[in-house]
Length: 73
Image (cartoon, rainbow, N blue to C red):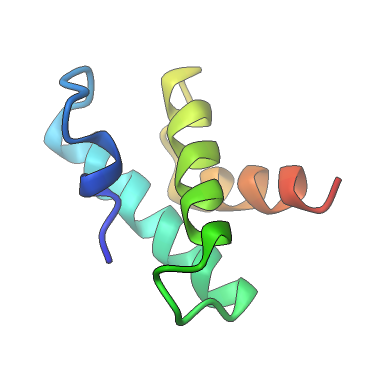
């Protein structure tokens, strides 16, 4: 599942931003072993990545790491 459904009404991201966010999202889900895309944790990961992207982060690895760090708190 790409991150697009979580930002469908948010037009503040350029296509390259969405690509970075999607890469971070998929990487985070892989590291968490999330296969079931209906798992509520999947939505939480997406929200965190979007939040960090809105704050200006665009590097996929950093977005992934930030989301995972936040989840571990």
